[in-house]
Amino acid sequence: MSHLRSLRFLPALALMACASQLPSTEPPTKVPVELAPPAGNEWYRHAVFYEVFVRSFQDSNGDGKGDLPGLISRLDYLNDGDPSTTRDLGVDALWLMPVFASPSYHGYDVVDYERIHPDYGTVEDFERLCAEAHRRGMRVIVDLVINHTSSQHPWFVESAASRTSAKRDWYMWSDTDLGWKQPWDIFSKHPTWHERNGAYYYGVFWGGMPDLNLKTLAVREEVKRIASFWLGKGVDGFRLDAARYLIENGSGVSGQADTAETHAFWKEFAAHVRSVKPDAVLVGENWTTTPIIATYYGSTAQVPGGDELPLNFNFPLASEILTAARTGDGSGIALKLAEMSSRYPAGVTDAPFLTNHDHVRVATQLAGHPGQLATAASLLLTLHGSPFLYYGEELGMANGTTNNDEAKRTPMAWDASTGAGFTSGTPWFPFAPGRESTHVAAQSNAPGSLLSRYRNLIRARHSSEALERGGLLLLTSTQGRSPTLAFLRTLGAERVLVVHNLTDAAKTAGPFELEGGSAEVLFADYSVGSLVRSGGAWSVTLPGRATGIWRLR
Image (cartoon, rainbow, N blue to C red; front, side, top):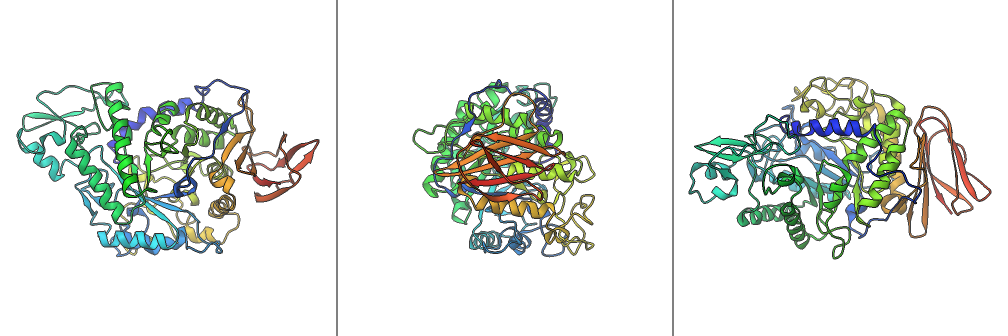
């Protein structure tokens, strides 16, 4: 998202920061906390996703900007298609931030939904990317921004030209400034109605991004046609930007966010996408509280896993994961899992993550602390749902030094050369601090590196269906401080015990009264003690910041 667009998240970030210091909205309980296995067998219900900002991943022509041919050249780093190798990261799907034609660097203001951004390449390059990714066993989803367009889009230019324009009702117009506030900040001084040619149009983010009027049938049909177009080019689904704000029915939070009309449209759009490509995924960006996120799955009565958006980013859980890694206390995660258990429809698939392109990077939030970064990785890749990684996160890549969104999206460092292996020219934006040592080449052959940890955890995940797509039974109490976090991942007869030590000191976890006479190690940090069974229960001693994963038999 652009710098201006990210302003909408400042109050939310402040609230989440406060929330991480407070109890969950769900009270502590002794009732077992359990999340059911995701319903359905679609690929995305057991995938590890990797978010890529194409501009910052790999430049192929020396202009300092990443592009699609450059990304294609780096696919083997992400997944080489050979399960027997261990040098690739092993992810299952790519999420590309906006790649459509746009006047901005970030692409969230589209001017042509059927053309690739000229900095990135051509539609033919995109089709080749999808083919090469598919050949390696990876899927590709793209950002689809349909809440708004660029004010330079021909649709808006035509709409603004005349009150009698055929596309006048493709956007929202008023004879007066209605004075609506931005729904995420009722104290905001940023206008949402903007003057053009003697009238006012609605643009909730800023004047350069006028909101589409999805109440208009022609707009809804065009959006569905565009989705069909890209599904036909090889796309496997869409990440849906600003999914809460599509259709307004008045001013204020209740009229500008999470409206019944917005939910109805997502059901309509999801049904269309399923009719074109039944296993295509939709991922909702709903940066809000757990109870509201839960509503975006829709009904599970007719469509397993929900008839609205089958994946929704879990922003509240992301905050709790980072808090646990930083403070050594997992109680916030335990409480959040309890709230999800009570609020989410049974059988839906969560989409956990640590950060994305709108956040300060994990390594900066955790001050580069190696143990905390290791803990964050372990938590993300063992929890319920389909996890999302942000490019460079697996290296411990820091934020840039400037106070803008570009600093969250700096070029990838591949080696220690002048251009960091990213470009032979001048990078479009400076590399993040520490890139001389924090790069792929330095970590690829280092068994104790953060990159190696991500690789090993993803492989452990792929080695167990229970870890990939199973349910979760929380073993840690939701009452009081939790220096360890333990849960059982289950699917059918398979049961996998996961135990994390969130602190810097050795801790003993257990006893866990679970069936089984033996334990197979799927992943264990160095010096993790043996899982011991005594008196019908399991316990284990873990060094500081260590994780152990065992299949119980």
